[in-house]
Length: 179
Image 1 (cartoon, rainbow, N blue to C red):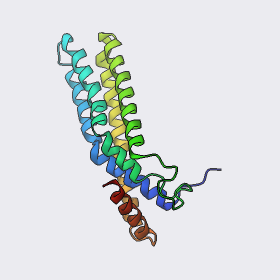
Image 2: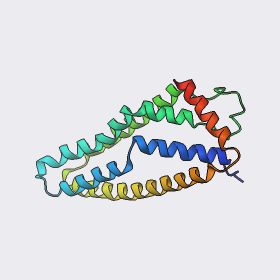
Image 3: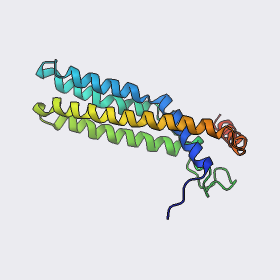
Image 4: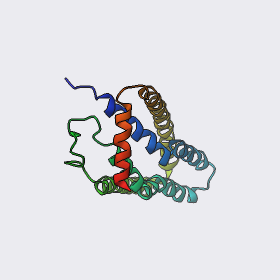
């Protein structure tokens, strides 16, 4: 049976989610996907593929550009409240560089797959696939908004807990280590 995460771990995950959505805004991605999905139906056939290629590259390129910020956030809130965070700060924990490299590789690989799909799919399918991607983005964006809303509620409730001051101290200490 899987143990539920500690309150510290849940709060750290909530803070990581909130910080991540400040950098990569889901609403912007959803608006872009829906806008392109509508626009491709009004564009001439010769413009559909270039617009689709540009759209598929925006999120991965943005992710690679902000990977350093996201990597710092991932490191900042990692392993809080777990058995690995036994007071030996940094022991057995990946570095900020490792988190950043992982994010860069993930966004680059995802972008390469999306680009390959946009270039290899027959043009007659592109309009429908871009529409399907927009529907997926809407669902994913709605789900992310719900998760962020719940994370903010958790952060609010946690402010009254006796361990919250210790948590804030740990986060501030880690921030000092990053500077």
